[in-house]
Length: 352
Image (cartoon, rainbow, N blue to C red):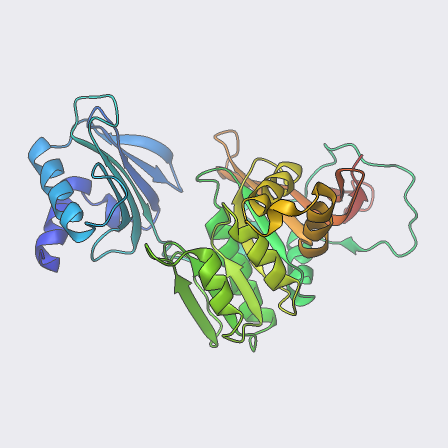
């Protein structure tokens, strides 16, 4: 086993100083041996034309020794040794290019942004009514919010289940950490249990437990264990399979106020994807689509969509916040948060 000092020296040869820069969230090595970084301040840029082959081969040999039990001899998945970062590394011939390996290193966030910081930076701003909504809504009983962060705070306080949605690198985990910070602020006595493949979520409540999967124990199994560990809130780092059924059952069995992330481009797509994942569970395969749809509508209260784009000055932007109101005739009934220019307030309006 390589020493920590030698490993950190190798990191300097491979990544330069970028691994230690707080603003850098991900580092990539492409097939042409070029090194790229994703920086929250400057975006994605190429920072080095070539990585020395001897350094890349040495790195591969070390991580292959540390993580020997992989599904493929040409793939290593795990955590960067002696550093809080997720690693995905592939060896040729699984890619085109002159290099021996390619990789992606995703660092754990150093700073936990609050919802207020999202508001101040403009990542979370009032959303204009770009989605068609019904105009003839009864005003009685309608709730207005001064800002979208008030919607999220209200959902946290009322223990609504939240689904954070976006593409790869959109900032789902960072936004989830902000929601976790809000949970700590508004309900500090809650016991929060998180379940992840790689530990990235940061919990600031005192009564907390972080569970992680391994080769023999998946998220579904940890959800089963979690139910016996007395959680007040259950948070799953990423839903991408049959564990979706176990999660919704947990949320619906006296453990509201949870959060989960999912890869999708918008709220409707996220709910449809969640439906597909539920059917991957052997128990749920006999369910009708209507049964699953009503289960999702009864479990997921709020869907928040975040995007990454160079068009945004902040690079990332929350583009959609929806309430899930029900499921009928093969369709989810959603209410979309829209900024009202006349009042300056934000309100949910039924989506057509």
